Amino acid sequence: MAAILQEAARRRTFAVISHPDAGKSTMTEALALHASAISQAGAVHGKSGRRGVTSDWMEMEKARGISITSAALRFEYRGHMFNLVDTPGHADFSEDTYRVLAAVDCAVMLLDAAKGMEPQTLKLFEVCRHRRIPVITFVNKWDRPGREALELLDEIEERTGLKPTPITWPIGTGGFFHGVADRTADRIVRYTRTPGGATKAIETDLSAEQALAELGGDWERAKDEIDLLSAIGSDHDQKTFEAHESTPVLFGAALSNFGVGRLLDAMVDIAPAPTPRPDVAEDPRPLEEPFSGLVFKVQANMDPSHRDRIAFVRVCSGRFERGMVLVHAATARPFATKYAQSVFGQERATIDEAYPGDVVGLVNASALRPGDTLYDGPPVEFPRIPSFAPEHFSTARVRDSSRSKQFRKGIEQLDAEGVVQVLRSDVRGDQSPVLAAVGPMQFDVVKHRMAAEFNTEILMDRLDFGIARLTDAESAPILARQRGVEVFTRSLDGVLLALFTDEWRMRGVMRDHPDLVLNALLADT
Ligand code: GDP
Image 1: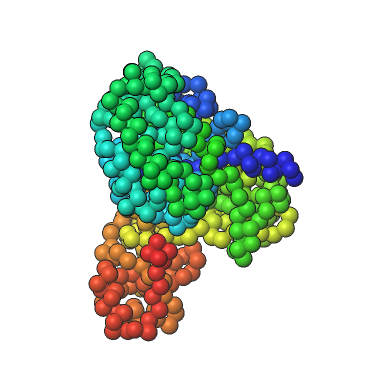
Image 2 (image 1 turned 120 degrees about the horizontal axis):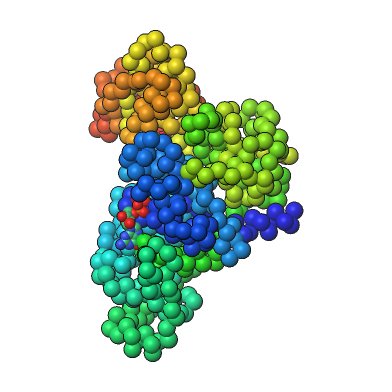
């Protein structure tokens, strides 16, 4: 039992999140390189045609250079076991991002030094706030001309309400990045690029005298700014960080490995280890209790040569041993774990044991859905992962009606995996479901996977709806009679959703029928 607590305490389970192009892939690669998980930079990055560890299994991903699947990269650093859970990197938001964030204890938010807060940065900060996930902010690309550091801090505070507490402070700007002052470790570190770029940077400690002599005005300026930060109390505070009230900030350049080691050190020192996860009754399941885990992602057909289905499970309590027979809380059926793997892109390794914070890929998991709980010993069920309000809607039909059976099967499968939400109504009939998504890219994924995996071409037409509200059986018929409103049943959980074209239309209906039940889905709250 003590061993479980010890193992949990040395776990760091996190995601790197950012607006596209801020450097997420580069940072993932740099972190893994720094921790020596892989011997040479380039092995993780799948973008330039190198064999990637990144999830580039899907042709569509290859074609677009994006990562659609999420899996976890494990590496050890300073005696700690890191689980870096990959989030989808495309410009759209998808439900996957939310689900992945249900599996982590901390997030590293990358900002592009020149761009600061971008639309997805804000959305992601918002999701972290919702889930109360502590965020460490890393201002990336400091080797390039960018914004003023103090100005970026102001922007973070204004836009997120989080108090930025810099751990490191950059010396030099505008493409002259000399190094950082480490405010908590009281060091001045000079960075020197190593030939070839993507290998480890050389870090040299400087005394204040050396800094002044060698970095001159840049150092003096940094020093003034640091004094200002101390004067206004912008110092790291563990309590407010864990309560999602402050965000520690680091500066660096992932591409040259500047500041990457410092980020790993910060993760070891301040990022939270797994804590007991509350169950549906809000009773936390102690870490040392027998195994429990949360399915946060289900992915079918990752490997074209094996038509399999993998459920990614975050271990919440106890010790996982491959071969265990667990209970699937949703059905009370046994679930055998003979095939347990760690998966990152195309790399798979068998996992024999795992502890709280670890991510295990379970193969042949056709019964498992995102949000499901698996356990051993005393029963437990974790709250379902909130499904966010869809904002994009499309019809789906089979092109060739002789493929109707495959069409139905495929849609059911993608629904179970949570690729999109599937909505049905008597009016439209069984062969014409409406697909609902958080980001329109989810539709492309459906189209591609239906063709590639079910050999079924589908026709889609975007619908002019933009808002979904939860309703009930009494309100549904009234709503269905309104212009610009349609009511559907969501296949996965049977709830009734009313779709409106826009806010204005919805308000009009509410004004005419004040007694209607119309509740916001989670993302709007
Ligand atoms: P992602 O879309 O967030 O995964 O971003 P990538 O890691 O693919 O990076 C986007 C672009 O920014 C690529 O061309 C990277 O080489 C570049 N990049 C990433 N980090 C840095 C950095 O620290 N400095 C500079 N100059 N470029 C960077």
